[in-house]
Image 1 (tube, rainbow, N blue to C red):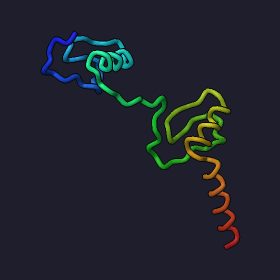
Image 2 (image 1 turned 30 degrees about the horizontal axis):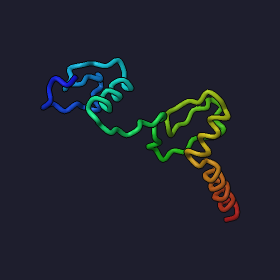
Image 3 (image 1 turned 90 degrees about the vertical axis):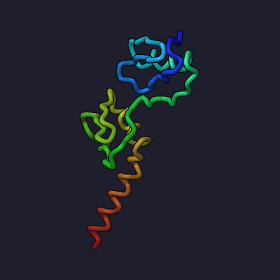
Image 4 (image 1 turned 120 degrees about the vertical axis):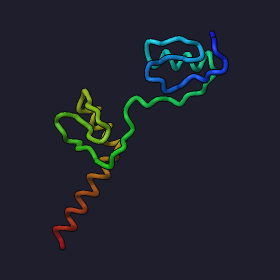
Length: 107
């Protein structure tokens, strides 16, 4: 129940505390659910993994299954390869590197 109608809740509150209702939630999902239901807020979906911010391409053959671009380690080689292929278009990136290398050898 809203206790302070003049206070707008902060959707980015790191403590998941609703200032309007004076209630603290255990986690982000509970807090965001409260904001949607009680305050009728329309919130953007939070991506499951970090969105790549760096122009660094991951190595699809990395044995640690770690994506340098997303700062995420995958549990299986198959999931890691699919991630590299669909998120970073690594197949085309690899083909581009091979073509560039071949051009350098010709020159």
